[in-house]
Length: 156
Image: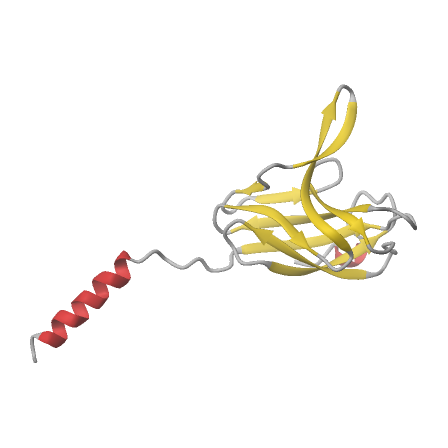
């Protein structure tokens, strides 16, 4: 019996060392915001800054204010700027900030259920390739704004 207990302890230790490490949630989300929309707009964009603790990919999301949430980027096509879905999502490098901002990558809300008004907020759940979903609150700024609303400029 004396030999069985130490051997069992050693076997358990070896198995735990060989098992892959669990991934802790490691995506930091800062300054989520959107622009106010026109009364019958069918799309809207959400901007946010993400910092991943591990390599990952932002692949979309879910919100009650729209039918779908897609990762989009703004690209030039024959001198015309267009928004296109980022196939495969947006790569996130470990420790690097990635800003989703006007004129670049953004989250496209497709099939809007209602108009977004300045000062209101709504929940948005971000989906990643590896990390568990993260639910955030998006603050709506003025239509045509190019920076986050002042009330979130100093939030972490």
